[in-house]
Amino acid sequence: MSDKFNIKIEDLSGDQRELAETIGMDAYIKLVKERGGTSVYIAKQDKLLAIKRNAQIISEFNGFNHRYLALKYNISDRTLREIIEADRRSKSGQQLSLFDKQDGEKL
Image 1 (cartoon, rainbow, N blue to C red):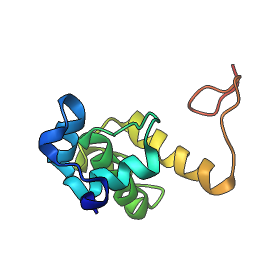
Image 2: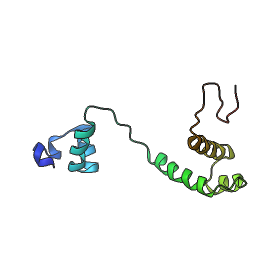
Image 3: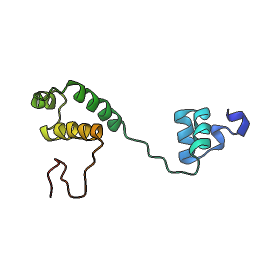
Image 4: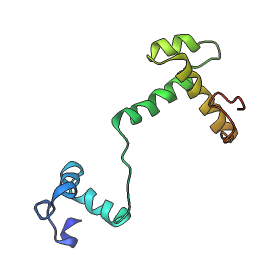
């Protein structure tokens, strides 16, 4: 794919070169074609791990095991409740309004 552009990693510099070295030249060219000129946010590794962790928590949650899951996943009870509540809201299509606290209570 990079032959079409006739460009090599050695032709790049700075962040662009680091990115191409990290993901490979073919993936870099594809990214340039699809998202060139735009800002792309790349999540931190812990965010990706939290997505998986949260899915596991939701699948294991039975309504009565808040404390057990908080200890198992080394998070606070409050964080666990926020994960469960966010899942409930996403399934019901609800979002927090400007006047809701995170626990759903009105200000």
